[in-house]
Image (tube, rainbow, N blue to C red; front, side, top):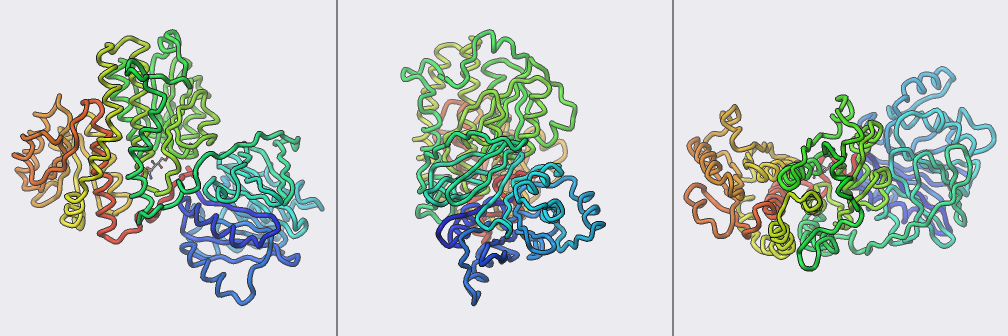
Length: 611
Ligand code: M6R
């Protein structure tokens, strides 16, 4: 899970490489490096730590980097600890080839042993270095042929970009299960793991498919399939605004993305709710009654935050459409011999559309005969391309590692989907559908209201942000929100946070609730409100400090808790979209209070493209 860039053209490559890597730092940021072809030689600069360290080294160099062809990499370590030696690019013994890689070469150990036996000397602990030595081993006068032979020997996942001093005007790259795009310029071309790296240079791209290889020079891009047969690629025009991938005055991307939620939700609902609120329109699905009746079971597969959206999906699909739903953690699903067949609909939720666990789980479900429906934020991502049907969340680019607007737009899509199935199956009345549609349309404004009331949240983050343990409790949909709130807090502020179904506390965890431990108690589910109040009393009896999350007009709650965070009243099946927002803000302000790196939390990366 790393970021890759490449440039070939008339300009000095270094500025594009560094700027592009900065845009991709969300993919990994424990070390960085670049390689450049200059005067027929390969020149490499690398550094452990953030990209800024590498920039410093480059700026202090007496001999400036002037090459017009180069590649760069920001790393998230898999094989070998973060260090300058282990950072990419990697070379062969004689420095004739250089490579950057995103992914994992699963058979690297046996390849390494074979190469060592043949006299190759390794410098790093990485799996990637074998690729450079393999290239050296298999080179027989033609760069492309050597790359193709090398790729045939690799098992695992990769996006690989190569340079060779034998062909100093050419970048060769290839991918399998990890993303890679080619940006098409005028007399210059770009390679990158993701669009933000190239968007300020070109909107025209080729999205490489699995096992495709591209030969890129400044004036030409030739794409070949796994047999070496040329592929006619369609140009994919990027429609984003470059500004959308910048911070726009906010201190952190996360805060900006929290504030973008009303728009992201509006965009995601746009055209999907009838003007008269009579029905949900999901043209991308076009399911008939027979199609729906043919589904015996739904399995939702996802990781992390997307998994929490899946939990909400389960709740609503079962409630509205009366269909049985399981939610599975993608990394578990594939290895558990899942019960899936042609009568199963597998719903795959992934912001990036590139999470390898989720992608692999989807492939497994497909193999077993399931129909697949992806919910993703990235057009033409691997998951979008593999799925039978796709519903896009229109959240725009999400840069902060902690997912916020992508999550709330996933909530919107699973809610729309549950209503859509129910309207086909006739399990909700016309009045209920209308009420839900109206309620959905109110949400963007209601989130704005929550965003205007941030000062109590700031106060609580200062008051309780230095506690080492915080609990989140809730029932029904509030439980899914509690899980998401606790993940946000752990992820960016490194506070130990646990989320519990409130009724489950007394079965063990209550032992940890002692004097002054903060407990965030969500109380927005009217069907279980009284039960929730009883659970709040249980923690209050242990002298916990309770912060309730409740509706503006709830006068009961303040009798039982120490503080209240208020949200506007909403339809009881839509409150999850509102109640998560103060929890996102709480995690954000606690992280700021504790001086954490909000957008790039330690040990994590935005796009998890390793298993
Ligand atoms: O791109 P995906 O939605 O597939 O990513 C899944 C998780 O890695 C992701 O949601 C992760 O949990 C977030 N960093 C949480 O904020």
